[in-house]
Length: 319
Image 1 (cartoon, rainbow, N blue to C red):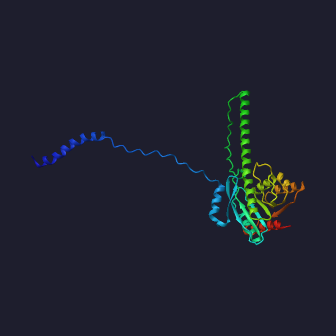
Image 2 (image 1 turned 90 degrees about the horizontal axis):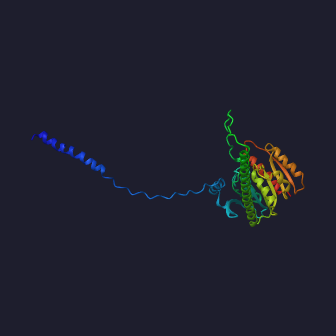
């Protein structure tokens, strides 16, 4: 047997064996892998509201001695407390920020919170719950213009009347739901204001002044109208604004207030609304309504905030 033949013989046998073994290998199923156990879906925590996110941020940024957890009904909320830097405090100023603002908002709220303690007044700035304020909600985009008129299927009078009744019922249900939601929102805000007043009294505040900024002024006025508190001697509104589609209006609330009230306004902003409030105050005999003009100081925020503080302090300490 030649050397070439002997060399190729093993390769020949191998070529005959491999095709036979391939079908057998293909037929042999791969060992089944253990099925992974089915995992239960993970429940995600509900998203925080804007007010809750602001409160968490303040807790991280401010010193612990400023932070107070107050109770309103079955929920707790953050308040910022600064005692008066005086052996004989004059009282406490309770600050209510507007919608979209925090308890240490850099405009009005924060500066007043920090400045008043050096003049013998403690300050308590509270966070308000999120409420539906259409003035702060994004506007729906306009529908694209089109020359085509919508085609409606012809309906008899009975069908049209049924549709109108159904639409009216739907609108009534939505209005009722919106009214209930508005009542619940107001109750939450009132509960927080009551808790703040109670806290100030527990800290022996001889006099309590309520100061509301923007829509916070509206909620303070409404609280004093619906839940008059003898502990509150004075009420100041700063750049007051009422939430859209909210009743009663500030014009209706102003004449009902039984304590001295000051309306701090920027003359170049919402001048007509401010004048309407002034005229409404003149049509009734109350404890005293004063309107004080403020000036925008462009390019000098510190000077503007100092001006506001001095004017509010001057009114608070008068008489």
